[in-house]
Picture 1 (cartoon, rainbow, N blue to C red):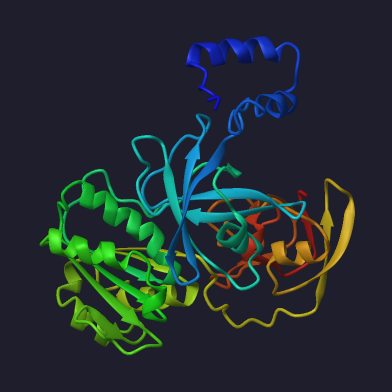
Picture 2 (cartoon, rainbow, N blue to C red):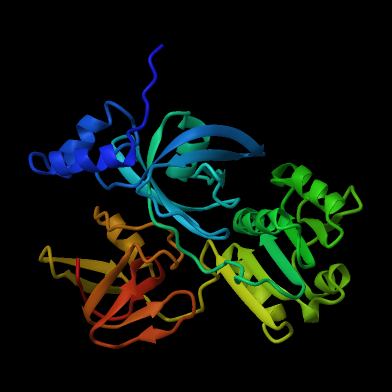
Length: 368
């Protein structure tokens, strides 16, 4: 059996300089990937090297990015792109651990009803598959010097970036007290439960509580019910001293914010779905002109512009769909929009907006 050995860095550089005189990067990529699937001119790619069940309807993928990927901090996300039935689809996923010494990363993905990317990665992805991988983004990262007690609040898939932080701190010997409260509907949907329990046995300063919303507790570290003040005070009596990171669906993050924003010294949140939208009277249609293509569309008010444009057959660049990655950001030359997270209207004539979290209030001109 033959083995393909990666080129040394000087040889790769010489090959690129030589090839650059004769071929365009896409042509170079086409041919060089016959030798190795993640070699490219400059395109960050990642090969699937592991595919392991993580919980009910969830899987952990191990990926080996190529040398063009710049890395990530624990707690950050990356955009992954796959070709699915002839369509390129991009979605955002959190790393669930620090980048390995060998450059490998892991992401844990929960299946989403109707989610083409999540179902592809759960059911169809195989070892050896190659995905495009984008630069890391997100601010749910620990400071360089970690001090004081911490509280991590995870709702559903929000466990993944927080698990990366737990593993980062465990690798440092758990230098500060940390409590994790992790909500899931049922016990079968909990990811990392055995590892988290092992960490509590290994580190005296680490505690974990599993909160189940559709199942009765059956272990000493399990509780029942959704996030509320009574539960938090019972599980974390010194909560007022804790620096808090919260991640989960929009409604979960909104509830955590309402409960804690005036009680703790630091609260940082990240939502992977929109919070319940403020009630507005946005209804009817507006004209949205696309400056680059010259098209004029009638789009509904109160609907994310990304969703409305996709319904018209357009495919704007997008990634996280939660207003964090900036992939869908574009210029607005005229008109008013509304931030669907806060209900705040933006009436500045010339500004940038994120299509995934903005809706039209008036006629618009977009740089698309």
